[in-house]
Image 1 (spheres, rainbow, N blue to C red):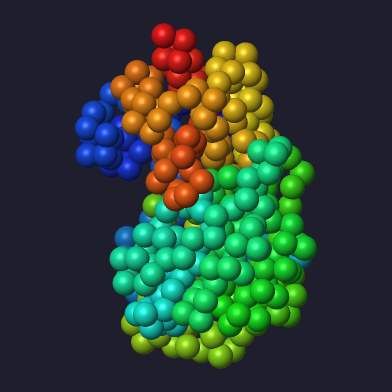
Image 2 (image 1 turned 90 degrees about the horizontal axis):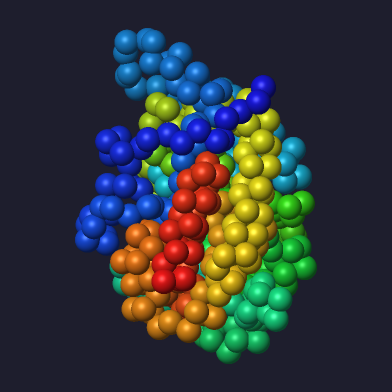
Length: 390
């Protein structure tokens, strides 16, 4: 079956965050939104069909976990990531950012610290801070080719005896990095030596692009498995962020018991009725849709690169190795933060995430969501080109 990723679907009036948050966040609602990380594509039909079948029954009472829920996740992980997870390692969680907050409160005292590697998804540092934990910066090192690597020398300098948690973005958001095995093994060895628990947020793991491959952190060594909590979900890949469908994978029994017993005590390991249905449908029937999506996203990335090269030479897209988010290097435009925001918001009438919100190293960058029909992406780039040229 050939799936349609080209039709523009009107989302206004559905309560979607992409449009409804424009006025509160930017003070105007006439912006072309390319910011929040969900896509403008119709959900995989297998998922909507499965949910529709359940909706045909008129009662939505308490439900048990479907028998195929954990096997579906297991088979997907084994097939796509060569990670043979065991049943007892798995638990539903009510969202990955919520999971970060839970881990901070369960495993860290209030005077203990969290290491994050900016520029990075902002809840990585906002959530620990809101839970009264100090955040320690270990900025990524930008290489000459525009890519990034972990700064292990700086990590050794900033990690003190109060550091107890490191949050890894794998694949990385916003830079779109698929971390290689050697880097993950080195990070695992460091964290084990320094008694750091690792959260590996792998929500973009099934959207590796251009032949790149996602490697689960916990799969690279026994050391990594023994010190980590992995968070994944089908939500980004299958565009079902509104259906909370996250899960945790914890191989270490001591860590698992402490985390999962707390989840169970508060009934936070119990999913709503559609989380299981959507997850099983996605992982059992959605792979061909995902493959076609990836091909479309790769073409969108190429389009952005070509368009910027020809029409906006001062803006340099960093090619993502995963996801539908493109990190735009705008530093050559020579604008300070306020001027850059003025260019995108007031002149180009675009709503993007500005780089500074991702922490140190994000200055002069903007994050663009290209998970949309090409005509929609082209419209946004055209508005930016016209604003820059003016």
